[in-house]
Length: 282
Length: 282
View 1 (tube, each protein chain N blue to C red):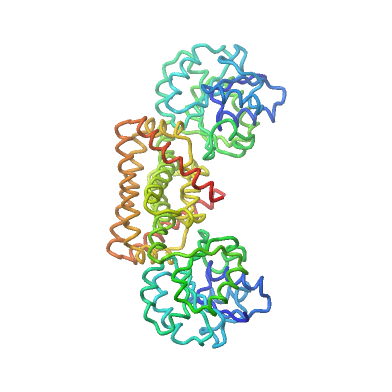
View 2: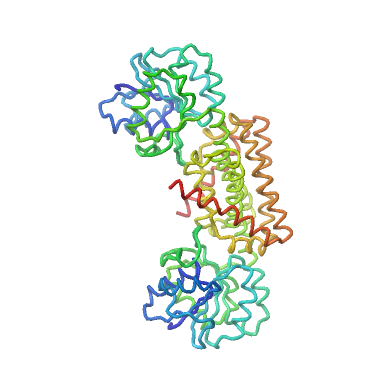
């Protein structure tokens, strides 16, 4: 593999560039970002070796790492123009709509739908680091639709970055992610909002916050440019998860209002079994 | 200071013991726990030097580190029997009701209402460690009601543990903590519940969970024995915070349902200002 091209040089696209360059120091990495500042920073930070809008025709892999709602059009435009030995991978957090949009594209075989489960609450090229993807899960959808030869290139890059590959149906992906990722971000953003509203009356409220609050509210620092599109792109699944969440909160609210200490105890104890599940994954 | 007595040898009581012994190796630390296993573990782990139900009459400080709903009665019983040079401190997460209950006690001067903002999602003596309290905030309420001489003993212990002292009115304490601590635990427990419910239909859902989910759901591992009583003890403030939270979630739900990408973006961007506030505290 000699050449990759990255569109979107933020936290994720930038970390792909840094990770790939560490493993393949001779590789040419071209790239572009809608923000000229980000593009400049990416060059300075060594994420890309050359800034350019379009991938060269001999590019091995084009990586699209832009917000979820831009990927459909961008994928079609990119596939239309790439050389016949180029693989195009998107890293979007939602997959069903994209796979459906691309289903009839004449170059569908040159597309691979991916989603690395990796990120932090920070964004932009300066937040990127070569180890972000190390030992993280990379979900791949509809692998059978991608050309066998081009898939080999993807495996080479993913192995170099030390990603753990998982294969999923795109609908299943979107259903799962609504619960184990998108809902977490919503709960955190709304927790931040609720405390900020309270701060208008009560000064210094944050002085009393401990590590528990910091942990639950961390994701409220996440990029709106990334997250607002995810919430609308995966709307149906997110509404299902959010309705379940609100309904659980409302039921607990009633137990608290009626001072049902025993009922609350039993409920919290039942939820504690998440310990075993989470610790299994460690 | 020669002798302290700890009632409740879990994460918090245990960490007080370990921290105090590290600083004052010659100190006698007696203590008791309702669980004989915890009491045995506390002796083995060096949290206490001797297990005994009641504090000796020459004990300098008695620390009560039991669940929030047990502290009222326990405080009264303990104060009734302690020597006149003994200070009794409780470490409960709620303060208004306790201060009110103790207001008329003849030995009110020998009581200090405290709340260290320190903890982890684990519990019991084996979860305790000497550094848990290092550089953590210790909230003290109604300091003016505690005997000046006895307060000096508390300062000596708190300084030894490297606690940062803050003084607050008990009502203000309970209002603030509902938002920056109790609500975080509720949001986390209910997030855990929502995903566990989904898991009944969708196996392997946790395979897709990244660090964001781990962070928001961490507190769902917390002890029900500690948290169920807090939720009922601080009921009014918690209902206020929870109602605000549910109302914010419901409003965002409507924006998602109507695919209001711009409205969602603006809202998340506004909440991002929590970055500056949280980073200030670092």
